[in-house]
Amino acid sequence: MTTEHKYVLGADIGGSHITAALLDMKERVVLEHSLTRKPINSAATCEVIMEAWAEAILEAHQKANVKLEKIGLAMPGPFDYEKGISYITGTEKYEAFYGLNIKEILATQLDIGAEAIRMRNDAESFLAGETFSGAAQDYSKVIGITLGTGLGSAIFENAEVHDANLWCAPYLESIAEDYISTRWFLKRYNELTGLNISNVKDLVALYDESDIVKQIFEEFSINLAAFLESFIRKANAEAIVIGGNISKASGKFLPGLSEALKKLGVNQPIFISEMTEVAALAGAASCWKNP
Image (cartoon, rainbow, N blue to C red; front, side, top):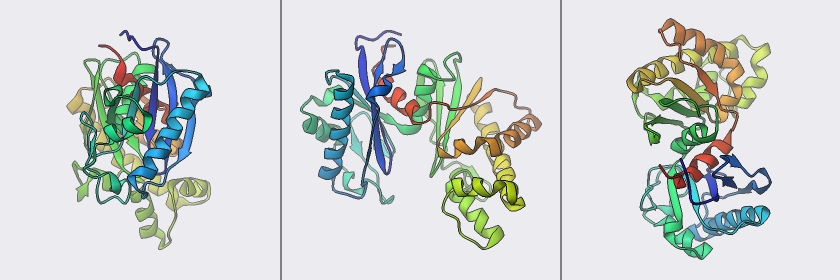
């Protein structure tokens, strides 16, 4: 892999923030001093959001003392990533984008050509980053999942990453995302205790003192193992990379997951991302690598 661009900006677009940084394409490392994170009101108007994005992108370049040239964006979907048109609706996030060419609007805001901006799915970007400069560099066929508010899935093969789009795959009595996401944890805790809890982090805090929370993580391990077993076999994957906010609680579910997968005859190595959101930045920037 070679690239004519020494530095490319990668940006990860979340529901509440944008994180941006420059990537040294030759060394495959993020310039840590350029890392810039800004809060975003994703329910705001397109103009307000674009101004915030542009501010973060320009600030990252200023920190690195690098001229703005090429940009890669990791975006949630649904989205026409090639054309830059948003089809996000019904999520209460980025509703103002619907039907608009975000690539052209951002390019105008930054005073650059739209051809200088490339976009890719956020789960795809995560796995692209891990295979470009992270834990899975040495494998030729890898699956990646992101565990959080939603369930992201992607496949790396033939030196390219593709969105597997398995969040809506049939699973048990519904779809995969209903059992493998933050909302499943919160729903299951309520079912077993009658109480509400805000997030998985709060569940982790109760783990040592609550047999119910231990049971929930054990159930999650089994759910995730069944999902991954099918995914691994279909993709003929050599390794698995797991990221997203729930992966931060891997100490509570990884032992059970590994055990459940072994019972299903799956022994491929599992990597918990150490790059966190930097993986998505690197993956977004790697849109500009030459095959």
